[in-house]
Length: 206
Image 1 (spheres, rainbow, N blue to C red):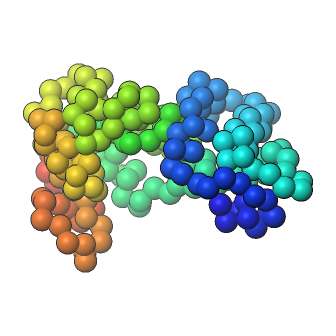
Image 2 (cartoon, rainbow, N blue to C red):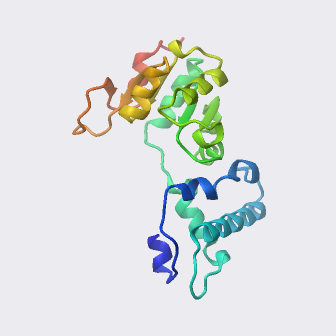
């Protein structure tokens, strides 16, 4: 919204649902393997959806002029992996353990993971917008277990939200632990200070 205002444009108020609406076709229309030109065309369609959804208006309100910036602000480049993510995922794969990302997220999270460089380390990606269930509801956890071919009781869910991740997973019959990266955060649920702690909880490498 700061960018829109800085560009001298007006829009309707922001709400989180905007992300779900503008990314709804992302899994179908976008692919990390597309050509540069195909990705450019997709970014233009994406900007047009943002313009329509937010009713962006004003002098010079042309979606094509803002396509690159909207994609930078809302696409995978807006995210950064924690420094321990890649090494832990590699360690889990070496142990032969199936791994899935389970997230309250809009459509196309699989593509985000690929663009962030971790897609090849995951067996499945489960986004709430695609399965019709969101954490802490048990259905999204059960769907992840189904896709991985594992039972809930033999599955460890790792997250950072007490309600969505810890309580939600436990109520769905999974084991759970929280990552508490902020040492000053008040947390009574079992936790580890970083993802590396996950490897210490699991079977050692063969």
